[in-house]
Length: 434
Image (tube, rainbow, N blue to C red; front, side):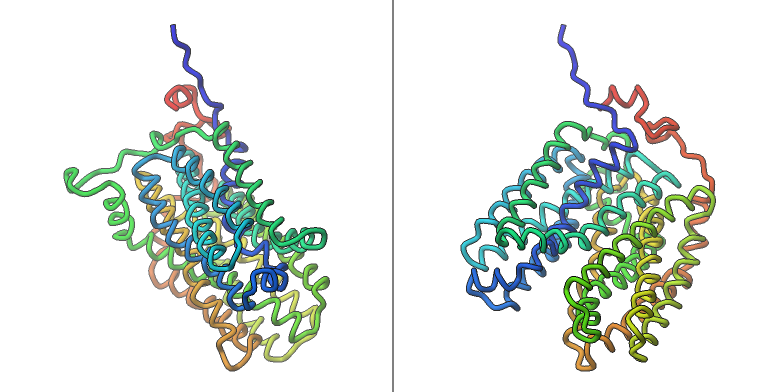
């Protein structure tokens, strides 16, 4: 008699740890090595502007990889694509550490982004397979806490490594992190695609399932508007991250050590914001959290503009940006949950489009900060309230808040349709299935 080896059940806590670690890879590798830019420029014989292209390369990989990743996890499931992507990520990271010139480094940075993107898409898709309603929003709150902290803590870790080693050691650390994630996935991540509802096929099998999923999701005006609102909200956060160092260090004269304290406080406040949503969502509908959060973000954006134009003291500037970052942390999880809750049968394409939305506006707007003749401070003061207002207008004028009312609400009871019991663990029938 042949015995069947069952993988460990995917409890809520285990899902947060394993999927959060996967989601950490892309954002952490985005800017962890930025403190080593001068050393890299000298070692590789390239200008700083050329070295900065390695950031753009990874961002391009993240955007394109998520679009491809949505189709991959929709067609081939979650577990195997993540295993292949995590292994490929380790190879790409090691190649970055060994790169003899900047051209090869840029090429493998694109590969890093492509493979990390599949992990991001799969993490959100597995979460959607397992959870729904308020529990899904809670899950995305914990996931957002990890993914948004990564680009804030990355440069701090990189600066420590550069203090005792060279820039290549940072990429070896990233390789080690990828290896740890690969082991975690191999041991603890089950295949969850079977838990998602079966997707209808109006084309009668003539259209690939992944393309049908993208078509269905993009045809949903509510999903598109939630994703567009999320894009604007994330645009606010990425624009701040792109301009903060120039404002605090060049305009206000903070040292790199003082600025690292500002970034550390931003990371703490961002964490508090995401966890505030996790606590509130059991009692307050997601649409209400988003509505008030968008209003607050818009008002604070105007306040940041006023503070920058008036050249207010550093404590006032820090407090204004801290409030902005807090509400960024509050808004991202419920907007992600509202979008992902729409089409559980197409979790892959939904996850891919949500991921693209999170990076798209920031990728377009953040580089514009350095190109505007008015200066970074003035440009930042203009863009923050504009993006905040666009986010609010997109959400309120589209009727997204009202439409979502029938899908989730405060104190909603988590159903067992996805094969979970009240503790967030897979039911026994589902454990046998995976």
